[in-house]
Structures are given as structure tokens and as C-alpha cells.
Length: 123
Image (cartoon, rainbow, N blue to C red):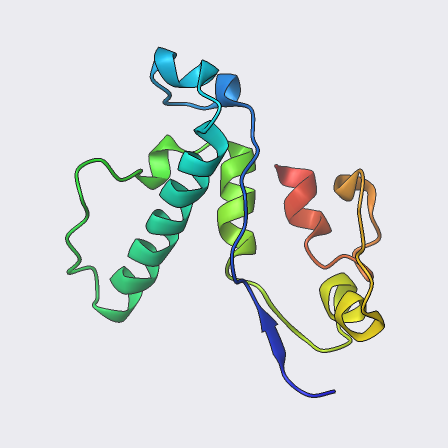
């Protein structure tokens, strides 16, 4: 196997009540996770564009700003930037084996197996 695994898409299923900024009506909305996933993806892409254009990006007014994020949302956002070689860490090993890997209590995982464990601990 050769190649690199990169973030494709994800679903943020965080608790709306723990967010820094959430309109009250959204806390009970069934589509909240999907909407927040899209907002986090837009913020990530905006931050990437900001790097490549030296901060000359125009963000839509409804878009999140980094100050709006909880620790868990930051973790989700930062994980988008990770890439793994085939066979490297849990994502690369799962790809090679062709089997899903479910990780509970990521904050307690060995950093040799789960390279994002230090980030998970801080979140």
C-alpha cells in the first residue's frame, strides 16, 4: 500500500449545551450536529484560505470564529488537519486491515497508537 489518508468528511456530534455560542432554539434541533459539522468545516477551510492568502479572506457573517469554539470543537477542527501514511497510527492501520476501529476514552490511549491522544486529553 502507498499513499496518504486525509480528512474527507466528518460529523460533529457534540453537546450543544456546552458550546460557547448557541441560539437557544438550536439546542433542541435534530439537525444541530449536521449544521455544526458544516460550520466547523467552513471555519477550517476559511482558516486554510487565510494561511494561503495571508489573511485576506472574506468570511460570511454567519460563519463561526475561532473564539466561538468549545474545547471539543477545537479538537474536531484540529483533527481535520491530520494526515496519516498507510499503516501509520490507528487510521492507517485500520485502512490496511480493512476493518473499523472504535476507540473509547481516547484521552487515555497510548500516544504511540493514537497520535492525537494528547489533543484528546486537552479537550
